[in-house]
Length: 113
Length: 457
Image (cartoon, rainbow over all chains, first blue to last red; front, side):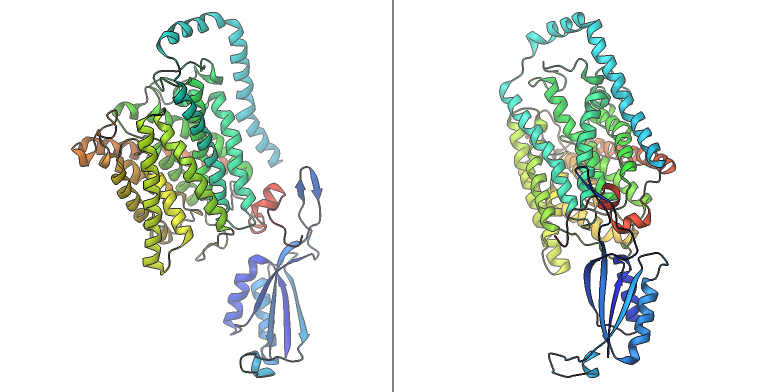
């Protein structure tokens, strides 16, 4: 079992979701986060005082999958989020120790899907 | 470079006329003050003296109408995404500042200066000759300057209404130029035709108590045009862009409703029985329309919605505007009920069908509501309510309905064509729409270098 964490641009969320649905990945958690990669932040000015290099709005997706779903999920995220511009985001893959469905108390791979 | 060009255009449009007017008025006064003052004094003094009650009410009414523009800012601001809310508030406040100056410099003269032409003329430029004595042809019992500043607030809110159509995607510089040109070449002439001395629609007998044609149809059609030509918002295709703060929108609705008492009851230009009638029917129509929209929501979407009720109430206020001084309270209920039906149809059926992205439904509410109001005036107007008005179709005078149709058609046609030309010229010089990237980041950060809300702090 793997946990996929992806940081993407807010405006790509819709297309990433569509790509995931096409691959039958329907279970995702979405967060609005602030982040800072290579992309420059935007200048802000308040009563003449400048603020530089601020954090930018990003979307963070969390998707838990079994091994056989891993590659197609990664491909779907890339397909939906890639524009070629700086700031398209990152995908992190983590090993997942356990997964438990609260309703039925199922454990492991069964509980993910 | 482009920014420099835009600022240069603004300078040419605004600062140069201001300088010329200043030179003209201030030095002109030095050259020939005595005869001008003397003739005015001998003419005005015995005939007209301002009534204290009327003056007091109109000062309050003017302040009420002023509050409508910030109210509109919140009404619209709540409906856009949170990355664009400052952009909308900023546009409303900018119009408040810019048109206030434009009106003093030349807007009032173009709109209300006596004359039979396209505009009213230039003799009141810089408020030359617009003094504290009443000007009987417009309002015999209040100072001329009070009439001027009351009308100023109407000139302010009209272009502000259009903001809702191009919300979330128009460049600030382009918006600023559009506003000044639109006020000068669309609002001022139409205002003159309908309300100015010598205006041809006024002489034809068109009834527009507080601005159904001049304000709402005029702005609504311009909004329709910009919504079509600026294109859809990114991400709006097939999706609703969700309002980020509906309580703002309700606050805005409340301020609009409150301010509208000044708008309509103030348009009687005196503290009199017509003002009371306008006050009563304004409240009645807003209530009937708000309730009707909520019921329509309940029937078609299973639950009554807050945004629906607020939209309906604004629609009701729009529709009663041209009729406020001429109809009874029972007619106001009918006007209110039907405006919600028509506007709901425009917003929920026509808009998706034709696919234009009138972001905050300026056309669907203000234009459709305004047209219904203008026509309803021709149906429900009654001399029993206002002897100075006229009877409508339902009171045995079909001619009035016909006149209302002409006034509406002229406003629709002229506003569409003139707004389109202004829009296209600006689009050729500096692109009207922000670059895609700026639209994604939001207008607050890209146009104003500010954001409305912090996430972490």
